[in-house]
Length: 401
Image (tube, rainbow, N blue to C red; front, side):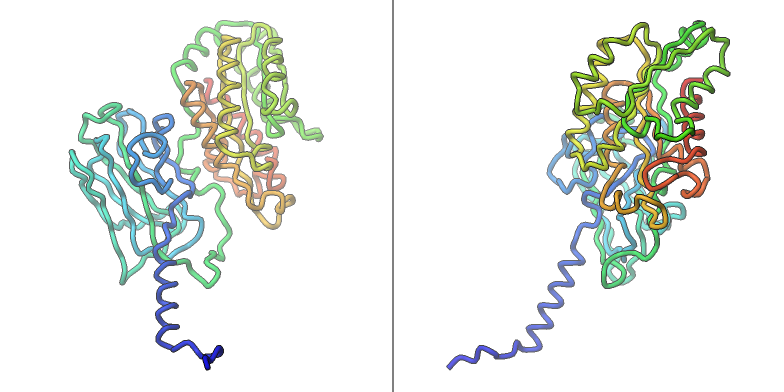
């Protein structure tokens, strides 16, 4: 008779445990994690950590723009502290990427060098840097790209990577860091303002030449009046604009809050009613992030709105990204932002700005570079404080002047 309660041999148990540990160690910690690049990206070329090794085309491949400023750096947030055992960087047949260096950090400020490498100019030859016996504690991984082979697909200064993978094990049994998340850590590395040539032309032929201005604001609750007496950041910006020039009048049209971005026909009707518009500020993403709207759907809606505005008006269109959620347990509305990611929609708004050649204000970078504590910048985990609103209004002023 078979013994249904027969014990599993200890050796088998040990093998199962080791197999489980090995599987955990082989998890790609970077896949799907947030990252930023200190250079602008080629529109659509965002596949740095999408897990697709075989793609050399957008969106499965990563590429910077063709600006000649070097080095260009990309920083990945693993979302917790890990014992990093291996980092793999895959180059692309699109060419160009030459000398790179990889480093890791606990705080996105102090980086420890790990390895430098030269990719060949004409073939795929990934860098695989292993640290099996001396893993490095880290949350952030930086790839610094120093130079180019030239002759790449979209220009001599574009830098391409197919993928970055990071392997390791989490600290602690739960795999979570005990340190509070730093909402602004990545944002400190990114330029807060993007100024295409249209800004210079707008300043010369509108701001400096006109006696009357019409400014419109389209956005969600991020740009809307919050029911208190405190002025919003668009209102503070207009006040600063009045001090900049000798204007007879500045008319402000605010359509922030309602209708939402998902009601594009109604928004298009609003745009059609704006006469002689000079400046249009578009600020969406906060409400969509709270509602868990898919990134591609949000980007499609925002791009349709911007392109419609460009067809209907000659106004300068400025895109303002949503502020990141604070995620601080001791601030109100903490439960509301749990599991919600505003930065992914901020990145989608950045892509729309690049595709439509619009000026861009990166709210997270503006706040991060202010040097203020996060509790000084937020009323709760969603809404900005008056100090942050003033900081953002000053960034808007700097963008245009």
